[in-house]
Image (cartoon, rainbow, N blue to C red; front, side, top):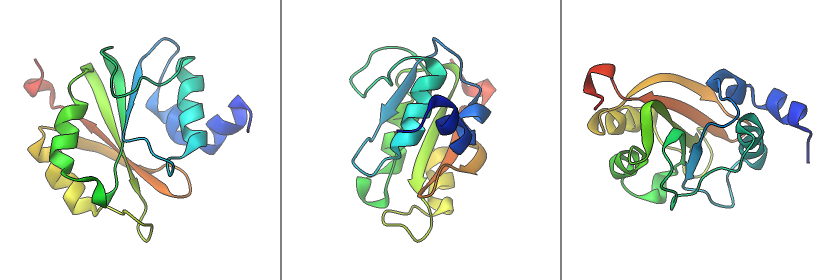
Length: 142
């Protein structure tokens, strides 16, 4: 397994997220195909394990691994908001184009809007995954 520095360098996305020690990152949709080095880099950034889908902790970031065949993306995004802190974000991880389970960007945009979110950035997250950072509009927060 790579060192902390190697994992962070390989996944510059983690550094761009601005995570700090003590923050809570909840992970939804984990499966055998998720990027383990990215997950380790997230854990290193917060100096803790990722919270799973059964967690009741308030999350600063929710990482949602999503594939085309996983079901209704709008429902999944709404569920991802359950434990999200004010000012938090959902990081929607989808397979890159040409990979099994790829989700079209237009579908992501439509689902995000339906869930009350908007995209702030789309980034590469390793060899097989793309990331879309989604946030709730400030006026719409409770």
